Structure formats: structure tokens, C-alpha cells
Length: 404
Image 1: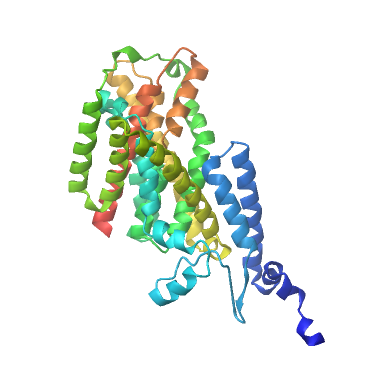
Image 2: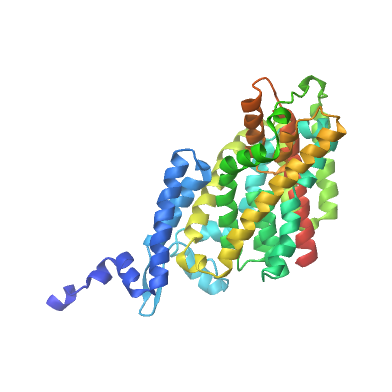
């Protein structure tokens, strides 16, 4: 009878037991990631980083690295998800054990969650700013893809293959769902670290881009006031027509990115058509539910074994480089418009071409307001912001079409 209760400490408290049973590097990485998860929750709660992503991501990261257990005599793991499982028979077994596996398998691993988020972004996006000033908006957005284009050859030179390089380069588009979608299609072996890096770095645009603006744009130019009264009003019919025509043309040109185009422009059309029940559903449960599970799953996928991949350090460097180059490119686009307009265009609008909607547009307006409280550039910044979503999707379509 006594033998029945001879349970060791490591068997009873397996999360701690697996720390001592694992390789030292893995154990240290787990502890670091647990602390990082706690830090992300704190920084999200303090609004220093984006709370909608960082709080669930931090909880997932801390939990998954704490909750490692002995699955068998010679195997350790968790009962959260198995991202590498593809055998249908084994998958059916895991779906009954790993509690987040159904959400991962049916919404995350196929990119569906990215489309849901894109649809939600469409519903909350006022596309009239883009339609009112298409030339300046698209010109700036094209310049702001500098990081998405220039990082590709640098990544190849650092040893990544073409598909991996393209996936990392998409971080420069500052569009999380786009990075997720592209890396799932092109570099499934690295999509977890690439997507995690993308979302971590996108939160840093709040803090990093204001310094870039002050470094590259003197105060006298940040003070420029733009005339918002000259913006033509775009009718609801015009916005819906633009949405369906743009969606159709882009889908014809880049079918591999068509799910993203359709999701975004459908969201825009639903908003403009005033379909209140659809709007409430998409901008509420669908968008926020998808964002919540996106953050949670990203955290759960951040296991020590994944982060210790030698390619992760390269991804960290390349992701930061991509966002830096895109910010610089956007500002160059702002300067181009400044010279075209003979000094009437505020070059700070350029940073909004980096398509982190609506973060970079807000960053631009805040930087201008600090220099001149009377200057309003937000409508122009939103036009560039929305154009950045479209140009990022186009580049994703080009990469996927050429390399898939």
C-alpha cells in the first residue's frame, strides 16, 4: 500500500521537475520566457505596449513555458497545442487532448484568423481619406515599403532562403495579419518566430517612430499646417464602388492574396452600406475575439525550443531593420510630397505610410501636435495608412506568387 504513494517531487510538480530534467539551455530559456511573458502583461496593462495583443500573449507565453510535463518516459511537452502535427489520425487524438488545438488547427494554421482580423480592420477603416487623395496616399505608401523590399536581399545574404527572406521582409509592412499569412504560406517552419517578432516590434512603433520623426524632420517642417477643407467629400456609393473594383482587380492580379483583399474590402463595404448587425458582429466579437486568440496562440507557440532556433537572432535583427527602413522610406515619401506641393505638405505624414493601422497615423498627428497644436494632418495620415495596408497586401501577393 505504501508503494502506491511513493511519488517523487518531480512527478508531483512536473513543471518544476521538467526544468531539472531538461537541458540547461532549454531550462534557462523557459525561465526567461516566463519572465518575458509576465513583463508583456505588465507593459500591456500599463498601455506601454498594445494591450489587446500583449496581455493574452504574455499569459500564453508564461503558461506554456511553465506547464511543461512528462508526456512519456522520454518525452516532455505541454497539453496546449502541437503546431507541427499534420497526420490526420494523430491530429484527431490531439484535438481531444490539447485544449487550444481546435482553435489553432481550424483558424490559425490556415491563416483564417488573419482574414478575420483584416475584415475587422476594414469595418473600422474610413477609406474616404484614400479615395479623396489617392496620389499622395499611394505614393507615400509605396515609399514606406522600403523595408519590405530592401530587407529581402539582406536576409538572403544572411543565409535565409528566398521564402524565409520574403516572410521576414514582410515585417517591414508593419501589418501583423499580413506577416502571419505570408509566413504560413512561404515559411511554415519559421512562421512562429517571425510572427511573434512582428507583433512585438509593431508595439514598439509607439515608442520608436516619434524619435525617428524628430531625427529626420526639423521642427519648422513638423509645424506645417495642412488645409483639410480642400479634401473632397467622397460619397458612400463611391467608397463601395472603389472597394469592389479594387478588390476585384487586386484579386485578378494576385490570387494568392485574394482572401486578404476580400476580407479587408468586404469589411469596408459593410461599413459603408450601414449594415448595422454585420458591423456590430465584425467590429465586436469577430475582430476582438480574433485578436484575443491571435495573441493567446502566439504566446502559447512561444516555447523555449522554438525560440532557441538559430534563425531567431537573424529574424530579430532583420525585423527591426525592416521596420526602421520602412519608417525612413515613408518619411522620404513625405519629403517628396513636400517638394511636389512646394512646401504645403507636412512630411510627417510619411511615417503613416507604414501600415500599422491606425497606430502610425496617430503617431504622426501626435508628433505634429507637439510642434504645432493647431496643425491637423490626421485625415492625410489615415489616407497614407490605409494605402499602406493595400501596398503591403500587394507585396505579399507578389512574394507568394513568385516563391510559392
